[in-house]
Length: 213
Image (cartoon, rainbow, N blue to C red):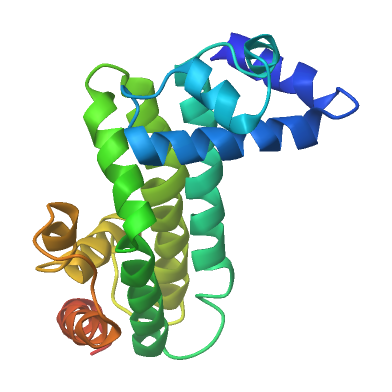
């Protein structure tokens, strides 16, 4: 991890470091989505990105390092977009409903599902890749949600003794009966009506447990 971070710092300092790194990551994303982690080689990535293999190794020391960088960037960007305005306005019921619907819509997109399947497939061999996905995505979102729940409890709008546990419980409630069906190929994608009905049931259950007296 320290060596990978040092390479990142070095390449960011190059005159065209940011643009070339972006070019490589875009090529890597296309290859990983097409062929999966094991089916993709550094030669494939270099060819798709339009760079030499030597240039590729200047920016990323290994395929694992490249995939981890891609995971962290994409999951963090998605989580930040999801959370940026999610907790600003409305009652807890309104905020949780909006957050849950946007979360399920994002999680069930075909490109997101493909990314998750790829990460699951390689985590047994490369656990750092699973950790990268977890930390940049689910953990980031749960931490932001827990902070919101804690503040609402302080204001008397919710009765939450353990905000972190409650945050994870809400996230699981939102996925209940829907997400795994898409993840395991039983459905291609969730439509908005199905998401809204499922999240409404999740919010009802959550508010019954944690709503104000």
